[in-house]
Image 1 (spheres, helix red, strand yellow):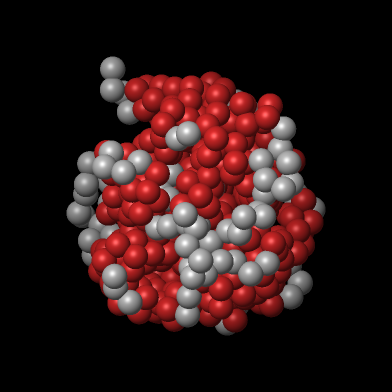
Image 2 (cartoon, helix red, strand yellow):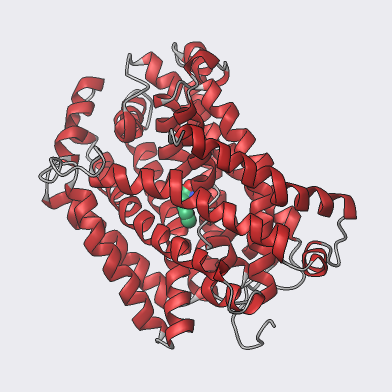
Length: 449
Ligand code: PHE
């Protein structure tokens, strides 16, 4: 079924770097600390880890199985595995989620660009946490700057995406991901020496279960799916470019492991600083942008580190957004016979319109509420906490119950060997554990009963 002319990732490193590149991004460095901060720290981390490794990894494998087996876009993949059945509807959930996420994510990526530039000027001389806090508020709530950066960010995505999978996506990821790791480790060392380090680490690692409510569990599940780029067919799309030799289970484990590692590093960087500078862990989406500059202003060579950091964060965002955009680009191109240029322009165009609304929702559109949330928060909440887990549940039911066991085994056990035990464990998770857990979290977290 794998059609010969379709492009594939060139190297083994390329497969890991692009998949990890998709997973690692603002979800780890911006979203994880702010969600953990809002939801009480340690307990949130523990529940997040449960969802990443017990539910997430098997569902990642399920997406890989579908993608590599069919070598097709998300809609085509379901059509070829289960012709004429309703399962393919999950593609529309995935495409919707990918466009919503691309829209709000690009706003935050735009902030990283603004902050790269501001770093160069030393944030206009602001040094106090309050000064930096006000500076971010003033910036995010202005109209022109955030919208312009969102557009520029999406335009850069367009340029990379029209060049296609191997030339654009793979090359970028190979260089950027290792750089990001190195710089994070340097910042961790710095944060661990701060006076508030002990308190920050306690907040992050000591679970306080009295804070856990069903909606905290729902958010932790959403964070796990978001961070793994899971449940929207992104990994189906990427694995459609894997070669037959790519070991799926190992790739899933490496991705989940590195993804978690980066999120924890980000937490270890942020929370000591939060407590050192007397800031509020529950500041929400602004957290990282208010806290990080305070760190940089207190270390030697701060201007250099800050500029480098925000620039790398911008690059890490790109390796994630190109993976989101690729879902609908492959879909439009393969299902409607559009050229790559046209399908890319369509995807990025929609994201530009919705991204503008998200950017303005911190400023002149902040009165506009959907279910009591700003547009930005609604896009984030609805896609991460609802669409991705629903998508993940359908994908796991499909692979667990419908897909022929021979196909699953054939994809999971390739030349690298995987014992049949791990195949049975994965199938058990997909049949029972993942759908039941996701279902229960919905019932309680959304207060359905
Ligand atoms: N996983 C990415 C991150 O953590 C975000 C993402 C979500 C990417 C969904 C692709 C699809 O930043």
